[in-house]
Image 1: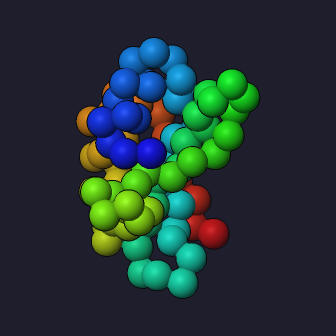
Image 2: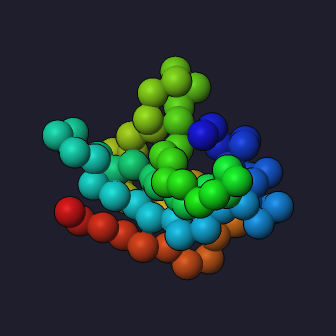
Length: 78
């Protein structure tokens, strides 16, 4: 999901369990959420290019989660 959609879903209560996860096989971080799509499913934040958005620093990923509105997150190193 794109950043704009994530902000709307967060405001409507449709996002939970935000986490910053080490990107597999890439030096970076990705963001995942539980999204209410009629049932709760895991989705990643998508860049404008249509690919999963990868952050070089965990601090940048955390900043985006804060911008969306989250106050508590999980960071996963595996």
